[in-house]
Image 1 (cartoon, protein in one colour):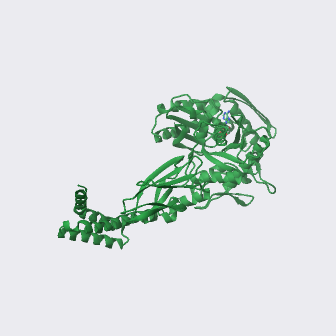
Image 2 (tube, protein in one colour):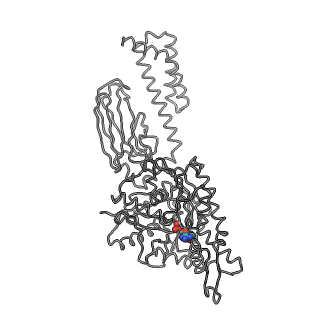
Image 3 (cartoon, rainbow, N blue to C red):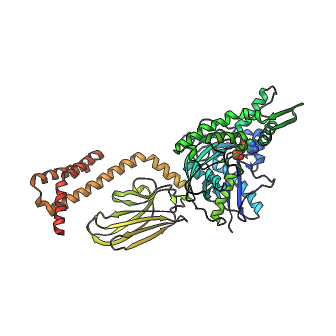
Length: 592
Ligand code: AMP
């Protein structure tokens, strides 16, 4: 069986797993560690080092050791939030340009750095499994935008993976907790407090599909803050401690971890500062005093996300915990207070996301069944309609599989066929989107506006787009298959979206003008046809008024004034009420 691995590419640590005999198993590196620090350290010569060995270099070579790269992936210089650029290495930030990091005097994209971390995970997995792995599921925070998701996918590809799916971290966590088995429309809060970031997500499960209702959080809040506060509180009590002392920080972090299960720990650091040693007892209570103000900061985010999801805590079916810090009893108490219920602690919080990613990977490789697969359309799909407009049939970000359709008619009398131009993109005018294919559907000749052609788009679970066009009168139909509708390169998606944003105003003005123009032309033709049929039954004064209104529409068509044209259209519409009634009367007489 072709293995697909699941990867939690974290800000602080990353993990990789694979389904073995129906169970998600996280893979350890050669040293037996399952957590790989997401750190890359550049050497003067030779290949960069990655993981635990690189993490040790943070104090030794701070300017060449890259950590927390996830904060920068897919972002442009002007998109960095305050405080995010506060790192020990140099960032290259230019307005409108992707952020890059400088190491060994060379710029590196965040994708390249992330790819080095992913490569290490890949090679550790290959060593452990004894064969190559080439397909992966990678998780990202629920709030990641398209550019951040695309950049993460690109990082996976640079590392040599085929990235089968990018999955939201809270969704992966919910899968790990087995919540996809909940009944009905369940609502779940995922409280994720890691080393450097806090995320709260509210999910709704409906028929095996998770939807993110709201997210909130703080990208600069986590266990690291507790470590700093603890170090400071100990130095404040008279123990003079150089803050950079790695050994001491590590001892304190270990003490913090032990205090999650023990009431009191003894800290012993012999000869850490020349001849000085440190001996000290630390009680859980003291740690909690230091940590409380930090953990309390998560409360407002949780309340905000509930409000955004338009829920109260009573609506929640489960609250689950993710991230190492949630092992702290204090965090569990505060979470219980915020949500008015005990959180579910049945899973290992630092592994839940990776386990969920692995389960997703298992689903994709066929090792796990019974769960609905989720994917979304990267860009909108539609066809060209009158006036060269893009008519969207399946909007961007729709969940696959999906089926949607619309009815179209003809613009010309006695038209015998219609050309269906299938397009992909976010621009308002058909010519600015990408053509995916084109075909003709034939039907019986009829006056314009009479033929009815149904066009249906269906994207199946494999991402193949089936376009069906059917003449509703004869039932004659044509189906074409397009397989490039979902597999669009991420660069291309990004370029299309940023182009559509750049041109949003002009595009919309052109659409509104074109719609008014199509309407004007339709009405002018209709007036002419109506005069030919029932002109005699309309009195001269009314005819004169209609003709004047029609002249104003023709004049407005020669300008660029959209509002003027819309007003002229409305006036002509008003003036032709009597004419339209005469037409209806005549049709009814004919039918009698
Ligand atoms: P993560 O980003 O999910 O790997 O979480 C890492 C953070 O969790 C770090 O700040 C760790 O110090 C913290 N952490 C890990 N295990 C524990 C524990 N047993 N008790 C308290 N904090 C922990």
